Image 1 (tube, rainbow, N blue to C red):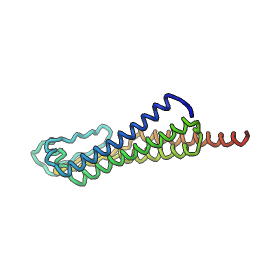
Image 2 (cartoon, rainbow, N blue to C red; image 1 turned 135 degrees about the horizontal axis):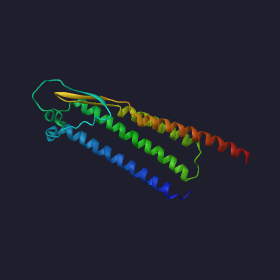
Image 3 (cartoon, rainbow, N blue to C red; image 1 turned 120 degrees about the horizontal axis):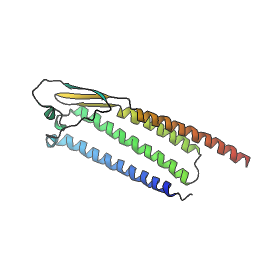
Image 4 (cartoon, helix red, strand yellow; image 1 turned 90 degrees about the vertical axis):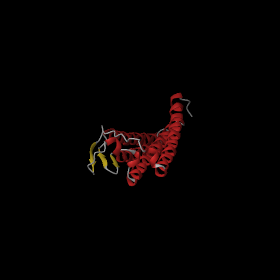
Length: 187
């Protein structure tokens, strides 16, 4: 086992990050339940749309003289839209947790000086698949309110590049594993 300080710090950061994802899930679930039980508490809480990465359409289903800040409040979110958002965010947290877990496995194997093993090839492939799921979950946004709504869609470029890099790393580790096996046979 190697005593590389950077690997130790990265492993601790992975563990800390996984803990943050669990806490975020608990907080998100608490907020989701609280909104269901006490919607009137969120009467004046406006929903802000971050639309810089989305092509989107906003609609006012009912033409009223009500201002946007009264239409787009947490209190006015339709229940099915709240569920979609909750499951989308929960899925994102799960994917990030699992991706961090896989990366931590790779770091642990590097610390144990078993870098070019078949498990790391599998881990990088899983990371690539998890990033793909992340890209799918972040590619859309749907929020429907009583008098209007927001729908957005985009194809995120950064996760697609990361998917490619993860699968390239899997192939690099696969070749390293083959060379290691060949080297072990010649000794």
